[in-house]
Amino acid sequence: MQKINVFRFSLTAVTFFITLLLVLAIGSLFVVPSLEDIRQNIWSPEMRFSLKLSLITGLTSTVLVMIFALPIGYTLSRFNFWGKGFVKTIIDMPIAFPELVLGLCLLLLFGNTAVGNLLSSAGLNFVFTKKGIVAAQFFTALPYAIRIMKSTFDYINPRIEFVSRSLGYSMFETFMNISLPLAKNGTLASTVISFARCIGTFGTVLILAGGSYMRTEVLPITLYLNISYGNMGMALTSGIVLMVVPFIAIFIFEKAEVSI
Amino acid sequence: MSFFKVDNLHIDLVEFQLRKVSFRLDQGDYMMIIGPTGAGKTILLESIVGFWKPEKGRIWLEDVEITPVPPERRKIGIVYQDYALIPHFTVFENIAYGLKKKTKYGISESVKDIAASLNIDHLLHRKPGTLSGGEQQRVALARSLVVEPKLLLMDEPFSALDPKTRRETRHLLLDVLKRRKTTVIHISHDLNDAWALANKLAIFRDGFLLQFGTIDEVFRRPQSRFIADFVGASLLDGTVLANGSGPCIIDVGDFQLLSTDYADEGSQVQVALRPEDIIVSKKYPSSISAQNIIRTKLKRLVPEGRASFLHLIANETELTVLVTNNAVTQLGVSPGDTIYAIIKSANVRIVGS
Image (cartoon, rainbow over all chains, first blue to last red; front, side, top):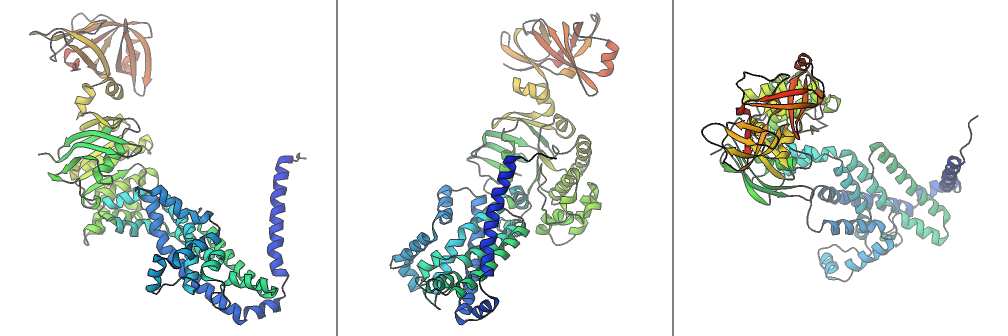
């Protein structure tokens, strides 16, 4: 009989203990409400509004995030320029920031300041509006997307791009012919993670867009509002919907086989 | 007027630097660059293609200054050690990639033609990831050659290949280059590459071009001990005793050497000797035309492939001689034996003072 290694056994036990707790926590979300409750809540006007708004803002923000993450990720991976260290630090900062603080910063910037007034006069008012939801989600998800895109481009051999240029293709043509197709998996992963992040953003949205009922109400806000009213059924249902999205996201992410 | 010219090039990247690099090439030249890792050789190639902007200095191709020209308009090809093939393209698409930018017609014919001459025509439908190292390198060569670059740069193209594949690739490459009269700059660690392919040789160290010349010049007249060690020559310090109508007499301490080269009387010089230029004999050769006969002792015998290096010592001065293994057997020498080293005075080269 093999002797049991105490060290290995205790470490595995700790791992399983935490996994079990998580499984129970996730499971209770599905066990506590009755199916009939969930069905009714999903079809309630509030939930339909919230789900629809979440999907529209989430998709819009994700598209915007990727439009910026691709060039910024490529810039940080390929080019050296003055102030690069500073740029990287600032861009990464929202990852470590509490969402509430990020929301507060954005609220102050887009509020009654020169920048805010300029944007308002251009029809872009972000304070307590649906546009504000997109802005909040955008700034929360962007650093993650940039990180994934940068590491994706880091893994592409720059010599392939060099050779392409020596064969007569400009920097832009090389980016389109070589770099972008080679970054396909990373781009997919980055998009999925961004979408999950956008859908789940709570603190930034709450502060910048305000959590107002049936106006700027996205799924996390629905959960929060209903918990505060004591309406457990609705809160649990929005929780379940919010769970499904990251599940699918992580599934696709694993398939794409890229690491952050 | 020269086909390709680099003039006083300075490059400053964080990890690597190049200083005061100047040389010229004629059309059809094959220049081999040799030097230790970190000497700045790759940076030189990548600056010639145009990936790095030099701090100082200029580059000319066919009498046009190309220093400000972007890489895509220089018509200079590059081949890397790690092949840098486009993984999501087939072999055909990889080779055709550069051609597609140049022309719309005859792409397929040109690709098949170059593929046939490099023995990769049976691989055209495959993806690079499924090929062996030697096959991938031939695809990379084909991709660069098919657009007929004015200048082809190669960064250690053979160093990831096994010796047999390396020899075969060398032969195929040489055939193709001869037909196309391509001018080449090639970085290598392998002196055999230089002998087999090149007519010009450059030695780099710490970002400086130490010596540049024909293969013969650099191998036979290395300008410093570092270069001599690198190309396998011995370098001896000496003083010129006499230089009259006859050969130049140089005192190298433990013995004197006669040389057909010229140097001022009394000057301090260095003398370069190639190991394959020295003949050995067990007996004193009484009637022989060679002017230098030095009595030495065999210190060590180091076999290397089909030949062996004999390390001879005359008092304190060491000489290295290259002889075939056959000759070693015939001579029947072993360490400690007395051996006479015979050197023609034309092979005693004064390389500078």
